[in-house]
Length: 300
Image (cartoon, rainbow, N blue to C red; front, side):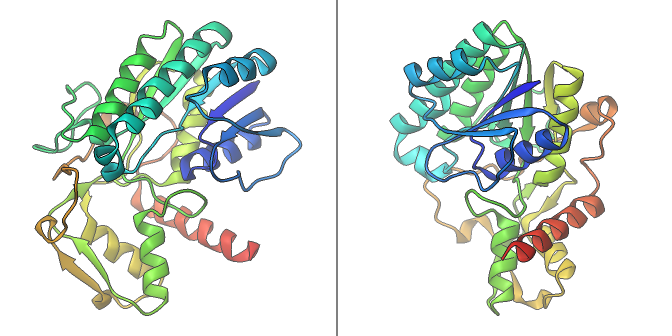
């Protein structure tokens, strides 16, 4: 099977590429700014901007992927608020470009979305709860969901929350924590913002199963609900850092441009009843985080 992964130099994209290669598939991975840090005889790396309709059309026509996993996005939440035209062109128009071509050339489409499609007023949102984004990033990702689900091709939308792990892409909270605490610094972590953090390697394992079984609909691939502060303490303990260097903070202490959901935690009960892979266990997720860290150290 030939799988196209857009945004393959992001953390979730990179982990998904590796998981698909382990399954024996041919993978075409696209990137824009940073190369994909992987080499394999079944991996073709292509520099591609999803806003480039002509380039994308040529790519699809040449490689005719059986499956498309669309992860390319502009994920800077404040950046999306600051430059709405850029956010719309990448997250909405770029997704429409991918979706149209998937409908023409491919059998199956998976779209990676986010907990930020919800407003954070109640938390533990189910797969079928009505979205209501409160920032522009969330709005553009919701529009991407609509485009994917209306593509006419068999499709799944996977929502994740605060994706973390070691690998390429923007610095996530766990990676920031380890780097900061290992250098002797302190970290401020929110006691009043709740998420259901998604471990990147476990997300990739779940995506492999969803694609293999050609499941359709909306899926929440997330871990247990906890505050940023609770999560930071768990990571500090895992790596043997002094937990006293994790300092409490509140959302009022941060001056973000874009509004943030206070409790965007996702319920995944429906998804867990369908999938066989365990993506939820905090113990397993932290074990994977440690494996990724040791993998990075071994590559240095």
